[in-house]
Image (cartoon, rainbow, N blue to C red; front, side, top):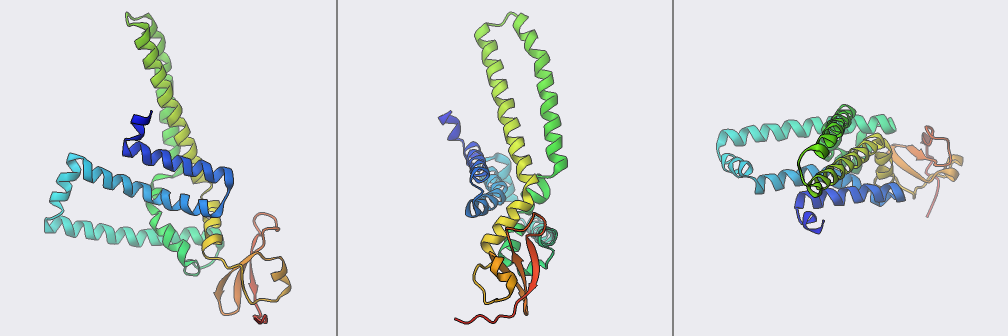
Length: 247
């Protein structure tokens, strides 16, 4: 097991799963922030590892020196940046119903997270993985009895069965965690935004401010108030602040 953890691909994946499990157990804002950041970073880590270690990656690095390849990569990065910002703005608007520019830190991070959340962790992809895993399990379920009657040493059969169950079990755990992460995407965004962009200190003295934990400044005298004691779905309310408090 320790030998497998020396594999950088497995080590980074194991650490990611640990972060997700820790967040689900603690519901901590900083842990949520780190989990979101690491989730976005993970695909790029794997890309760097692949480019640095694989033969194809080495050839790709060599070809990148050619001007036409470099131009193609530049256009891809430009298009990716534009579309990722559009996707991030849409997510923020869906969650908070305000302009994404008001949540600068969250907006920047979500744009960075476009690859994992906007492209990879989609419901259709996750459901496809589940279906594929079920099919593989059914196929292996039909093969196991055949292995028992074939002239193969029992220890070898037991090893094959054990490894197969381990792979299927770990795969189901991984897909389940990814599915949970995708389903709780809005919760993660909310918790990160509350930690990064909302402010617990403000100059508002209105009645609503007494039950408000933090606010997001929207410009002028408008704020988005976070009131956790309200029912779910109405915890974020736009308010007018008179800025009458002095210090």
